[in-house]
Image (cartoon, rainbow over all chains, first blue to last red; front, side, top):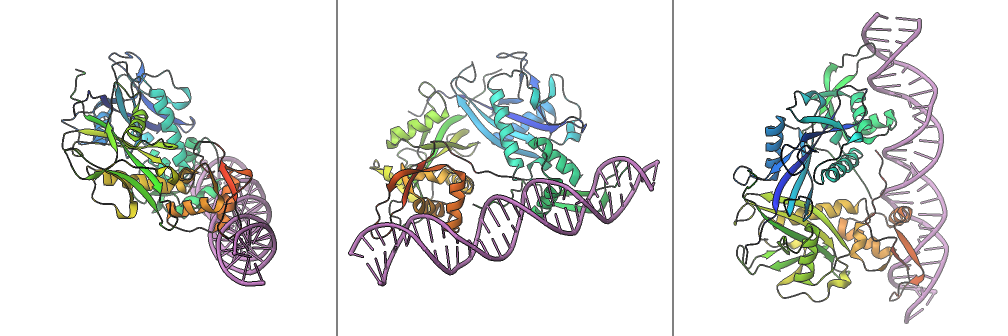
Length: 224
Length: 224
DNA sequence: GGAATAGTGTCTCTCAGACACTATGAC
DNA sequence: GTCATAGTGTCTGAGAGACACTATTCC
């Protein structure tokens, strides 16, 4: 009675970062070239099977994939959505529990062969339904940028308010009033000034450095 | 290489409704008594295995469970979260893709034996990690009530603004200003008046009847 | 008329947006 | 001093909260 054929169970991760050069706007997502069938040679999201003997839960699977395939540890990881259907994998009925993660630009370091950062504006054709997964992740990240501290996880330990403003702009794709932004962020209180620390600017006034008040995501207040 | 032992794959549904009697505040959730091990005799969320030969995707599984076990069709169904871990099911590593659904009070009709509506304020001990699933569903529904038309799916085809206000209050557990609520909702424009139709009140002024502008969830505007 | 609920007008306070202004560094 | 960027002050308009008020039904 309880023995049904089981679907394939995988975890895929949409890993976001920003280009280090401020000149290039917008988010980038990590793609790896598939080395096996199906979709051999196609770019895909990093992912893998749930290892029932190794992983305590699906978040563990996500972290194992990121650490093993890419050697990164991410400051922010969130479950995105689960894509489970008959058609999404030619090998059969499969469920992918998708996560997304934010990685500071500085932590980019060396990528293994076959992995690359791709601007979300110019995505190639992806394996499986991964295009849809990236699309949903982008919607989530952009939506959360309007009411949470999420974009701050794209920055390193310390950052200036202008840098934070820049990150929000690049994630949102719009430029709200900088003065309003400053007041709004300061009112939310999820960042605290690092006393006495200032940015080293090329040829202008240095800016106060801040850090996150805590490692958690903070949502802004909302009323009906 | 690609043959890993697969986790169990199930779908569970948190089905919400309101008591018909306006006197009783708050949401109710549907529980069914488990008739098999594990957790035999314990109340649990309606759910079941993914049937790879029957279900096109996990939303199909959710609808099949609701139709088969309870004979209901729901006007709103949304994927909630996936709970996948080694420990959540004594039979082994398991993934439950959880959904939540909203059912108008009037559609309650006859429930099968072993099923019952339970106020969320007085939940018993549940099977598996279902208490955590209900908790997350409640957080989602209450959060969405602050910025979307979600609570409207707890009402029937037509409803009055005072009824809608009552539903939002019961979901949110608070009583915002009724005048502000009216203005806010009218500005969002997700409900339209049914021309010439009014409620039949016992001994007071009848109210304008409204219906949803479309069958989709509508999110309110938000700025940063 | 009174009771009860539906619905509006209006004041205040907060906050986003706009934008002019001042502040502080490098040179 | 100039240039560049950091950061503030202030006005305005939109909207939430509070609450007094009017409107329409049944009795």
